[in-house]
Image (cartoon, rainbow, N blue to C red; front, side, top):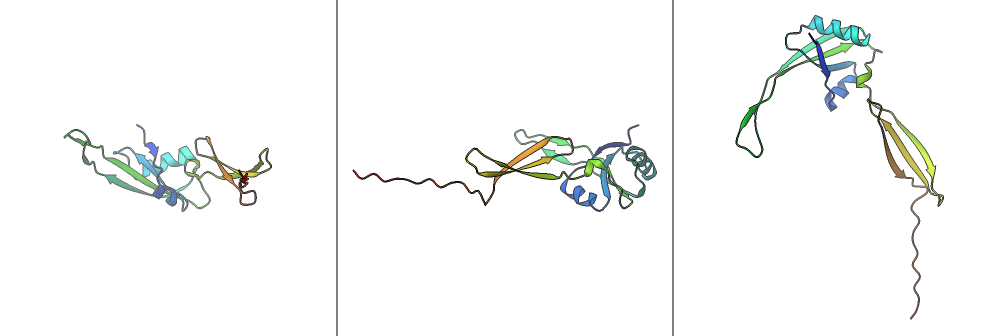
Length: 142
């Protein structure tokens, strides 16, 4: 039986992760002691507390067709680990700033950001020191 199905990564769970609380979706028949044992074995951390929440299924309507469907219910487990222990799945990516000069001599800041899967996202920003050059127009009398 699979005890830990997946980590739940939302804004709320990421704020909880900063305070050593980690959220997982678990199987419906799992007990708190089974969750604590699975997290300890899988992530090598000491578990202090486990809180479980049963989320009910919902009835929703489709957008274009007049039909209703039922979503599946799930069980969440919020696990508290001891201070100093971290689970790598919930770590926020760190940004690195690099300054590059263009052919015109303008400095440009590049921000590299890695997500938890290791993919790199690059954001380009022009620095205030090397603002974009202004274009000057010459008026020729006719």
